[in-house]
Length: 231
Length: 231
DNA sequence: CCGGATCCGAATCGATACTG
DNA sequence: CAGTATCGATTCGGATCCGG
Image (cartoon, rainbow over all chains, first blue to last red; front, side):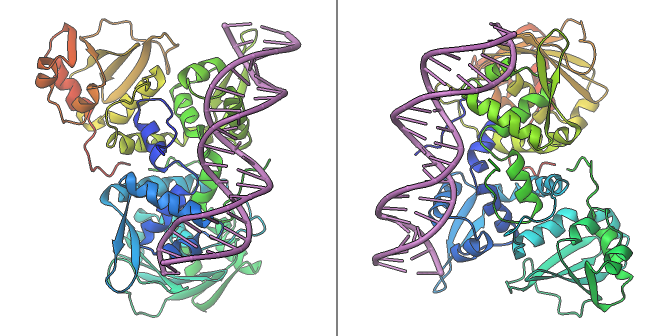
């Protein structure tokens, strides 16, 4: 029952014994967006077997990473403990690191609301965002639509479709300044391989509504440079 | 042969597909200390089966994380690529995170030179180290003895026993200001659970040579606070 | 000794079916 | 909704063996 030990007395080893099992860190990624029910997690991780999901949730609870919270007459949710939330910078940094080697999606690869939410948070540049005018974006990729508001250096992301309760306060009920619809090529815009203009010209990204020039602001605000020593 | 896909198009997913397999991140941890031969890695990871080690090394090469470098008439070493070295802040942060939940060592748990080296780098506080007088420590834990020099805000760690080539330039051939011999309780000194004085009084840490008061400097310089949002 | 490859039992994972 | 149960497919772990 005790997870197979690596036989070392070391912080890194302890960490991978807690969150290094298959799927564990992806569960943490989704929970970083907000508390989630078992079914939400299953939907966000379509390929996870249900027995693995419940095993991992049990292990993460034993490891003090996740807490099971019953909601009166509403089922129950899983949420990260304080200790689990300390993984946020690590998961974001891993996301930036992995982003650099993402090719194009394999067939069957999907984009989920939670993963795209974390991707935006991963790619967000505080320094750039802080010096931009306040902007509200709406971004649709595949079946997922997100809202993102950059104001005062802070980024807020919420899920429009599939709908989910907003995290961290009330949802800004404002019209977006720009609506962007994109395919997987949005990755190449964020990495700088594809300029905003070329992306629009090539039909990879559509500005459905609002000033097309705002796509350049988006690309400047959400950007992952290859070869970055993220932190 | 292709590693089992998680079926998501996401940076975090890509990252765990590259370095999320069992043992992979521990190999990276050891390679962050310096290039290592197959046999060095096997010694530093005593419980890894050799087939897993060679499989992981192959996968890490395919993932662009590790490079295999033949040394003329001297065998060959594995080393991190530039991309692999970008994992350093992530591994250090994971080490800090895991450190907080390390209990006492399970029976059979060992401390290796590379893991202790990374632990020191994990625990090092640049801000504190930069404001301290230059100090050279010698730290023995179990069978491992390390040298650590803090000077000008920079930390240099080298392995005295078992001996290994120093990393990043010539080894400072100076007498240490203090020689510290400790058991696993050194963890509680670094976490602040155990004060330097109590550690000495309790016989958990011995100052073999030099001013015992330097243990306090050590504890201030190498410290991991529970509940820290590392970066 | 170095750098693996091979073999095999044990444990885990993945897919699907099923239940309170 | 929130999981168990089952079972074949993979992977892991431990030991041994092999070519330079």
